[in-house]
Image 1 (spheres, each protein chain N blue to C red):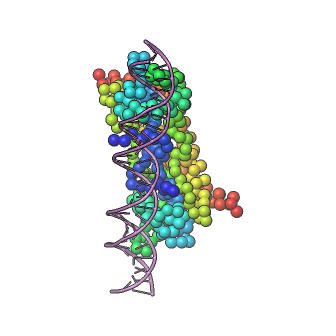
Image 2: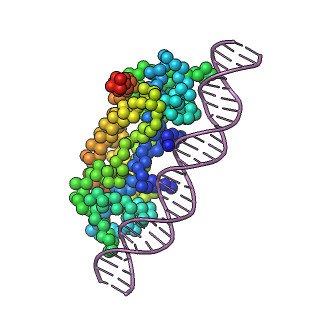
Image 3: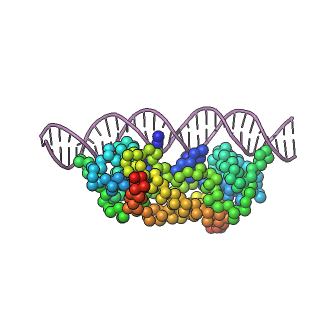
Length: 153
Length: 153
DNA sequence: TATTGTTGTAACTATTGACATTACATCGAG
DNA sequence: CTCGATGTAATGTCAATAGTTACAACAATA
């Protein structure tokens, strides 16, 4: 039994940013280099095994293809056809956004219904968030990166 | 250094549902009972100390008043004037919704800019979420609970 | 004023989960 | 068959969570 209370905020979706960076690197460097887990790990600055695991999730979602023996990953869709929603759902278990206490007092009218009432409201909020995600494509992010690069020269 | 990768989803905002339940109980039972931390704890089914801590955050945000010696909490605003956004911001540190890796490779064009690019996109999504929250009031939730109660009789 | 029940916090512990790393079987091209 | 790469399991470390105990401060009231 857990109640998830504490002094620090716990954020959700810790893997999505890593997955985004992986996909951006494949899109940007796929032609120039062999995008192995070691190569990708050096951009994200994490252990290659973490890249492989995330890459496995992206592969299961049909976003990338990974060459088993020879190494290297490539996109299975065009950057404009990969959205943040695709990536989010690839790496996040599809659970509720918020964790509502599991065993409130069933004899309390509030406790008895909190999960139903709040859960329904919050799932609407989550749907909106996913809709936002679906409007952002990998191509958009590639363009953002290119624009940021220009300014740095 | 943490990279937040793993097999389970980590959700954010674990305290908000508890805070919501506390406020609902105060609103609903404030007239009938003395809403002490022990009373509230029996609805949420957590340790009274957890209630007191959350109650302290709600008090700091000006949402409730807690009687120090005598015990019991009461709302400082009308239920229609308390939104989920108020509650969210009372109990959550105002950090980014997503945790983007802290030290990507600065020599990689993607790594160098991922935080800027993705962070800006995601903060927009968070703003939308907060806007959603601001449309949901404690009164709405009280009505939802009352409606759920009816069906149970 | 002493009692009583409550709040506000500060410890402290147990436990969970995240992340890094190692290890190794498997794979595919040369 | 060799070599470099992937896939995945196992393990260790560490931070954060949640629960609990403890106790001082507080306000009503007997």
